[in-house]
Length: 210
Image (cartoon, rainbow, N blue to C red; front, side, top):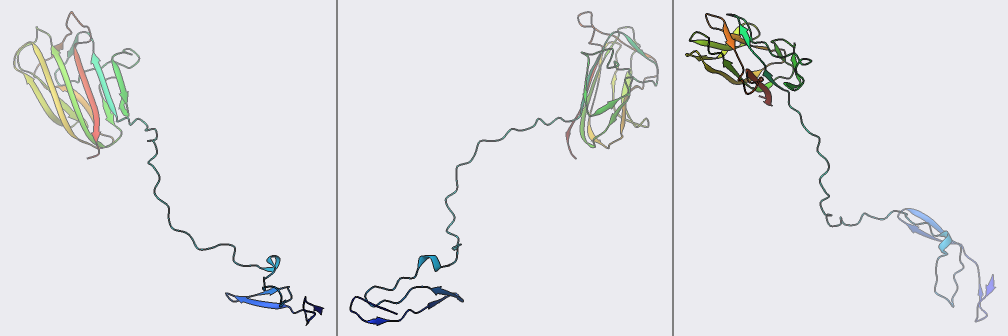
């Protein structure tokens, strides 16, 4: 018990305050000459308030780096004179023998005459062959698929010039491709005197899924 400024007797009381189902003890004596204020050391209210409103959207950041996408492809020249027997295939350079004539990624090549698709998809194939001037007329070549199917055949009815084969198609993984002489005679391919790598050219690349 104590006396206030008016010499009145006041008894100490432990006060309690109920907030949100919790009871808090206020260790103060209610005094008549001052407003009642809870002791801050005994006030234990919630520590996390409600979430505020979402702020405005920030500026768009700079684009990140983009990795290069490499589709499977094969690109090769043919050098010098080559005689293709009837029913046989065109021979392309071995990678070790023609470093600057051969470029490939994702297409298997046996280093001789056969290309194997490793990733299914839509492919474009173009092959150009230069005829020697001593060939008989009617020189015919085709694309052989899986050593069975003959597609995209092309013919030069004369004795000189070029034979051009081209196809766009869907190839499954594991598909094999060759360029074959379908003529009734052997065919000689030759390069120009201006460029030894002009005997022939093959370009094969994937450009889509299906």
